[in-house]
Length: 437
Image (cartoon, rainbow, N blue to C red):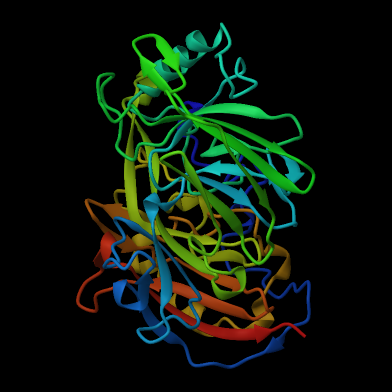
């Protein structure tokens, strides 16, 4: 098995300080070790579906998990108190807006620029371009052509070896950690997948320069066009520049390139950080063709089933299976994983009793992690041809921004079967079990 297939996250993302949930004991032992004193809360569990009826789309369209991302407070969202859904295509670059640090390649950073992970956005560092003014440097066309040739690897170039829903890892939909020296990137913004060099969708190119000024992200961009092996700034094109300061009321701020006009998006994509704790989104993943023989790769989209916790929300997983059971994916989604007869689906491993009896005294504060967008991720269910089955061997302990602690597990959407359509949303069962003094 090569590196492109590695399931484990020694960083979930990158090779980052990995998810705590993967380091913790998988059983229920040792849960009385508390790092903090919690005030117990007794609450009757709530069962709730998160679907189109509980979300409002900012573009006025009918919410579809094919085309939208969703952001919501799971403790409040309902048909009357709706979460927000935003179009997947509404942004190209995200810029981390919090001051707290997270690990990127093992180094703590609070700066990060990342590509839209919900569509097939691609990027390549272009070292020869240091200015976006005329003319192009002599070596630029050759470097740009080499970059474009790499884009034709099934449209997966620039997506990382295991592309996941996490912006904490270099190479995973990430431009990286900007510094005071501007770096220029060729970015392809077409939403469609490139399958052939003559595909006309391969015309949406921009050169983007990104740096950090000490107080803001400095971003400049200019459209660029390709004709054969030649590259030119389109006639009449100009350099558009924008300064993106941090606004800590938001997890990230967003940028979209649109007809040479730049729009900085804040709450137009994600709502204020204090109003959401979980999200649903599509993510473009890379699937390998016969990886053992060095085969190529192609992109595919997992729709509406990826959850993320924001940096102010921490979580850890409890499960009845152990690593010896080889139950469920333990790291970034690997489409080559053998899901047949997964113990995580076995009724013998059902965790209902443990979930019902889990109380404040069982919380292990040392296991909470907010390092990854995939602490929950895709690892609550088995995917099968447009449907999914919920893993019955696990539940989650979630600490919210205000210190409240909840236990949460996933249930099938249907009460008559254990299979749910991926585009119909999710169903959760949760209860508050503690508050933090």
